[in-house]
Image (cartoon, rainbow over the protein chains, first blue to last red):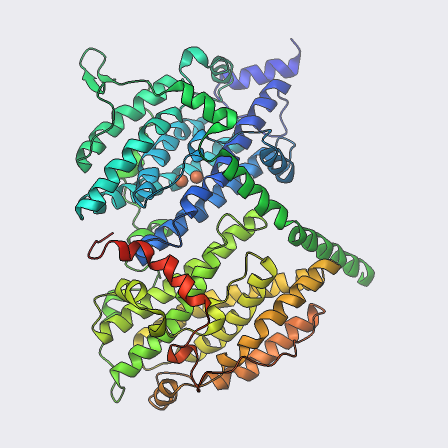
Length: 312
Length: 301
Ligand SMILES: [Fe+2]
Ligand SMILES: [Fe+2]
């Protein structure tokens, strides 16, 4: 083993951060690029299902909250693409890979938002699950990713609180609003459980990611934590989680729960979720119809630089 | 599992000072201190409350409807920086609109801002046509509209900081900072597009040509405004024309663009947006904006 690799291993073993200029194994770099890009894409694609309700938000206060939230997600995408860029790729290249379906994003955003309760439930369950996944990433071994996550997690927790607060207002509202919350929870519960990824036995990359200090907990550990935290919150809302197998297990000091339908998960990942094609087509249209604008900005900057040079 | 990172700890912490949270829990997300108290301030002496309410609707509807058009850009912008900037501009205008509508509601005995936003029909809206124009997600048209709108509104608000109505004055005071940024953003993109590529030059010129006919209305003084100018509450929009022309001439020249020579859109029997007479577009904006709220009368969200 050469000196560089020893140094890398020692840094990881000591729980210190790897920085962009440090040597790192090619596989570590590749894993990080894939994970950070996927994470950045999720932030950007996630703007679509929530953006779907901005124009129709039922009060101006809710409109302001939702607009600010979706704007945050664009900011998250920016920090994450910037973190990926420290590994030698650029945003444009990653965006191309997204719209060519060569890189993935979180499967959750391939589900539609059909009612305004979905906005609350996404904040509560989807941002909630994202927080469970992402808080450990604040201690990720790669410095720029860890630092981006600290900032992002703070904002995700606002999103979760705001989502939950919307649901509280709705369950204290009319019968129609209460039913909307229950129906939405029924739809989003299983896809939310899927956000933690396949069961540990089917997650071949987990061990390597944990050894590298990129991942800190297994998928099933995080999923269990999410279930245990969500149960009392659902009770406080007075709604039912759609799993008859969900019961407290005294021995394990945890809830037993039914596994989501992993066949559906695989199908959605493979491209046949309800909104996969729509999400990618939307992102492609936005990107391609903006190309003349980006080209103009480059041409303008070049002209300005040339003028300055001529004046110097 | 280690307990060193309780995911939900952050949910129980106080975030009172954080701006993100202010959007959710501040009454209006406008940043205006003690806005609730302001909104209930007495009508200044010698001012007709219904005139003042109409004036707040004019300024408020301009902001609300323009914010709606900008919000259409969410997830459609040419670059992530533009996503953030356009959403931010929409949020600023939404904040201004909410305070002004709340003031109008207080003066006109509507329950709140939402009743005015969601329960009025087209003919009761008082915004200018420029605010409601669609752009079909053409970035050039969005920028052209924002350049004209923000240049005009900044000229108005900077003269309204001394309004005798404390709510109008407070919105203007904060709005000047916001509009300065919006105008600067629109002007910088006008330069990049105008002096960028041949294609971008043609597109932004065409966009300016398309919105230009709606400029005249911005400087037409309504009767309500005329009365409120006398009372020290409003500014006469006609007074802002010189500043508007000067800024536009400067930006267009730097951007290698020509000032459009298009006839202004006229009124119908002397009536325009300020009198509740709109383009065909506003009905569609409201149909979308109000649909959910109207499906659930009496619900609170
Ligand atoms: Fe996010
Ligand atoms: Fe979020």
